[in-house]
Amino acid sequence: MTETNRPQPIYVTRPELPSLDDFIPYLRQIWDSKVLTNGGPFHEEFEQRLCERLGVHHIALFANCTIGLVTALQALRITGEVITTPYSFVATAHSLVWNGIKPVFVDIDPLTLNLDPAKIEAAITPQTTAIMPVHCYGHPCDVERIRAIADTYGLKVIYDAAHAFGVECADGSVLKHGDLSAVSFHATKVFTTFEGGAIICPDEKTRQRINYLKNFGFAGETTVVAPGINGKMSEFNAALGLLQLKGFDEATAKRRAIDGRYRAGLAHVRGVTCARETGETVSNYAYFPILVGPDYPLSRDALYQKFRDHGIHVRRYFYPLISDFPMYRGLPSAAPTNLPAASRVAQQVLCLPIYPSLEHGQVERILELICS
Image (cartoon, rainbow, N blue to C red; front, side):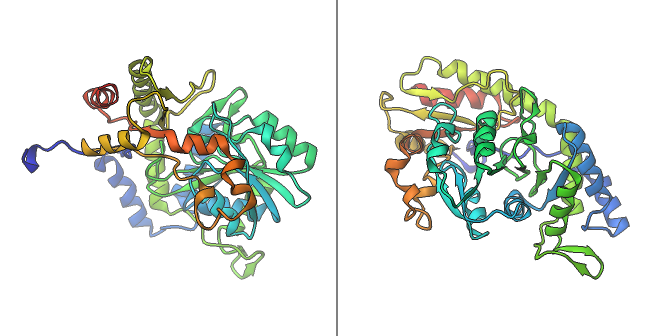
């Protein structure tokens, strides 16, 4: 096979971008205005449009979700210990450590793959100040049970909602839950500004404090009120976000169709389990994880390699667990015996490609490799 007719690699996700012709007028406005950052007109408009689209009232834009998480913890003055999940991207725990906070890992529910509310209470100590759950793969946590536990023990709840843009539960946007929620607009997410993120705030006073913290603590030209960081989103990222909003519903519909084809094609494959369907939740179809069990003819890693050999770059996402990395595995809560469900899922999970431009023939090829 020559280089010219070699099949193009297929990745787990690819950013869906507007046409360059659509983006150039935005670039020209930025260029002409000479306002590149610091809350320019596109930044302000993007915040407003996001509030309307997500059904929330107060948003603070960020350069990325990780800085958003770090700032959210600062804004709520979290200290001591925070209960969180080992089954996530490392930024979840890293944001705690950057604030001098000790992560306490709790096992996940083997069906939802989210933090198991039944395990949270046993992990609470006098040093516990907050819970940081993750809406894993965009599937909502049990927000009511987590809120009830937090209220009983006087704890804050900060959601790592990196995957949950556009997701809704029974009472609207899942991003409204918790004391704060941080969402990602990274290039691998369902909604992207290249790099970016946001914190959803409960009120304007909290949003104002967060805005101080993301801009070095400045509250005026010569007034600094907090030891803030530089977390501001640029005008270029905000402009791209405005364009992306226009195509989000169409992109989600294409993801939904791919999700349905995968489920139909894998329904009777022994040893392969699809992640639980979202039921009444409005999903964004951010990821398509499968679990490769002992009844499947190949191990998870052998299937992973089979895909790679065919130019399909699936991901073992999330493997290893956060708690298995050197900076965390010495914590008592990181012991594998404390995290049996998360440890098993991490050894079995494989995320299949899912993005709007993934062609029907490519989906069929992926299914054929699993079924053959």
